[in-house]
Each structure stands twice: as C-alpha cells, then as structure tokens.
Image (cartoon, rainbow, N blue to C red; front, top):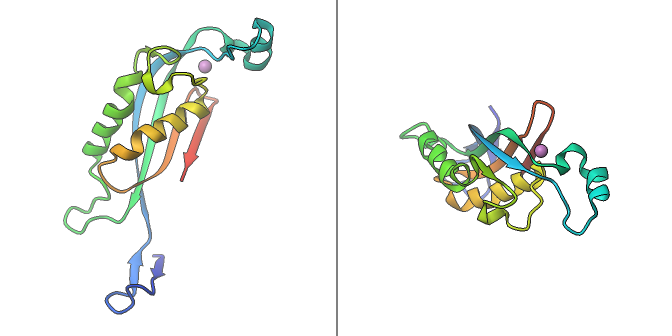
Length: 150
Ligand code: NI
C-alpha cells in the first residue's frame, strides 16, 4: 500500500493512507440542440453536424469522490448521501428536460457534453456530503464521453 510521509504530523503519526476514490453513477434522459445563436444555419450545420437539430440522449453521470475512509464507518462518503446530493443538485433539474431552455444553471451555455460536465461539477461541489470532488464523467452515447478532473 502506498504511504505518504508528512512532515507536519511527524511526531504523532508519520504515515497517512493514500487517497481512496469512490464513484456513484446516475442516469438521466434529456433533449438538447447544439447551436451558436450568432451563426447561420449552414455554419451551425457545418460545426455541430446532426447535433445542430433537436435530439436527445440517455446520459450516464459518474461522480467520483476522494478521501480517507472514516474508521467508524469504513466509508469515504456515504453513497446514499452522495446519491441524494447528485439527484438534488443535477438529476432532478435535467431529467426529462430540454437542456437549452429548461435548466437555470445552463442558461446561455451550449450544452455540449464538455460544458454539461463542467456545469455539473460546479453544481455538485458545494453540495458534496463529504470527501473532495475528484472527477465528473458524463457519458453521452456509446461513442462519446467526457471527464472533468480536479
Ligand atoms: Ni447530442
């Protein structure tokens, strides 16, 4: 097991365990369209392809939290609480919604998978029930996924 020595705690305990990462998954379905409002139809079509028209995805959101397991529970974070935070901060606001017009925290954002993952990170981080946010992964389709890391 990897051990990290810290000078700060040298007198009490010279070793702390490495970071443990734990991931919770949730799914949602949503519609979006990728368009730049300042561009012509042809330009949007050229850059965004088929995604320049209305369509939807069955998204998978994976949220990874890091920390050291609490001795009492053996948990970095209670997955029930993490799931609740994900639902409250993100899933309840995007599931069965149109991402271009129904979601307050996405106003003015082109809802690419990249922008969605960044926005979800910002919504989730202050609501985490414990640990530190280390990774947000958003799977948009069998062929596309994005990842935001600390
Ligand atoms: Ni799309």
